Figure 1: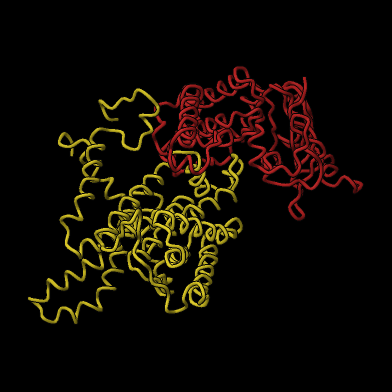
Figure 2: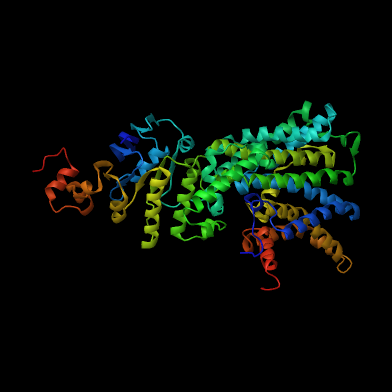
Length: 347
Length: 271
C-alpha cells in the first residue's frame, strides 16, 4: 500500500487520476500532444493523425471485444458506414464537421445494433463469422449502391469545416483528431467506472451468472455493440476527412483484423492497452520502413531484401508479443510503473 | 408465519432424467430455511428454477404471493431474489469492490450518456452505491482489507465471502446460498454461520440455503426441507427432521433390502 495517499472522500478515491504525480504526468502528456504539431515534420504529423484515428477505433473495439468479450470482425465495416456518412453529408448538406461526425457515429451505432442482434445466441468464433458476414455485406453495399456511395469510384470530400474555418492540412486535422481521441478515451474510461462498464465486464467473465444477478444480456450486449460502432463510425468519419476520399477499398476486411490485432497486442480489456496497441500497429510498419532506409547506405540491396521481409517481421513481432506478453503492451507499462512506484528505495 | 416463497408441485426433467418430481415446500418469512439431501438430489436444480435459469415443466413458484412463471432472471433479481453459486461465480476481471458494486446494478438507473460523461446524477448514484457498499456490506463482512484486490487472488473462503457481499448489494428479500461453507475450514465456517444469522436478524432477510455441513445446518436453520431423488421427503424443524426414519435412510442407507427394492420399484410387487 502506498503511504501518504489517503483519500478523504469516495469521489477522490474513484477519480481517474488519483495521485499528484499522475496528474502532473498527464498534464505533461497533454502539453506534449499540443506541442507536437508545431515541432513535427509533415511525415510525423501524418503519422500522428493516423495513430489518433486508430486509437479511437481500437478503443471502440476494445469495449466490445476486450471488455464485453464479443469478438467482432465488423470494425472496418462500421468505420466504412461512418466514412460514407461523412462523405455523403459533406457533399449533399454542407453541415459542419461536429454534426457530420456525430451523425456518422450514430448511424454506425444503429448498424452495429443490427449486426449485434445474433450475439445473444452466438459467441466466440461463431460471432466472429456472423460479424464477418456483416462486414462483407456492408462492403457489397459500399460498392454497389452507386447513387449514394459512388460505387467502386467512391466519393471525394470537401475539407472539414466549422464556423468558416476549414481544416485542409494535416496540421488542421490534427487539432480535430487528437482532442477527439483524448475525449473519447476518457469517456470510455468513465464508462468503466459506472454500472454499465461493470455490466460489460460481467458479461465477458460469466454471462449466465451476470443474468441471474440482474443484467439484461441482450440490452447490454447491444449497448456494447452500439458504443463500439459509434467509436468506429467517428473514426471512419475522421478517416474520410483526413484522406478526403472514401472508396470500398478504404475499409477492407484486413482493416478489421488490424484493429483486432491492435486490441490483442495492446491488451484486451485495458484502455491503455488499446492506445498502445493502436500506436504499435500503426507505427511499427513505418519504423521498419525507416530502418530499411537507414540500412540502405551500408547495404545497397537493403530495399530489395527488406521490403518482402517487412510483413514477415511485423507478423513475427505480433506473434512474439502474444507468446512473451500475453497480457499485452499494457502489462509492460504496468511493470515499468511498479518499478518506479517505489524507486529508488526498492528495485 | 407467512411464507415468502412457496414451491408447489414443481417438476423438472432433462430428457428422461427427472431432476425434480412434484416438489412442494415453503420458505417462511425471515427464517433460515435449508434444503438438504444427498448429492444429485436436485437441490441446485431447485435453486436454478427459483432464479429463473431453468424452466420447470410443471408446478409453480410463488414469491410474495405472486407466481414467478415467465419472469426473466434479471427481473427476479430486481424483485429481491439474490443468490450465490455453488462453484463460485465471481467476475475475475474485476476487483472485490467492483464485484460487490455490480450486485447493486438492478437498483441503479444511470444511462449510457451519464456514464460516458460521469457527471451529475450518474456520478452521485455511483457515490451513493459506493458509500452504501462500504458502510453496510464491506464493514459488516470484514473484507475491507481486500477491497482493491482482484478476486482471482483471494483464498476460497474469502471468495465465498465476497460472493455473499455481492448478493447483499442486491438488497435481497430472499437470499439463496448454494453451499455457503463448502470447502471452508472451521473458523471460516463459524464466521459464515454468524454472518448468515446476522443477515436474518439485522437485515430481516429470509435465507434459503443448500448445505451439506449437518452441524451447521442443524445449528442455524429454523426450517429444513429434505430432498432425495428429486422429491421432498419431509420438511420441518431441525429436530423433527433429524429423527425422521426416511431422512436417516436417505443419508445412511438401509440394510433392509426389501424396503430398498420397494423404494426403487414402487409399482413392482416384491416377490
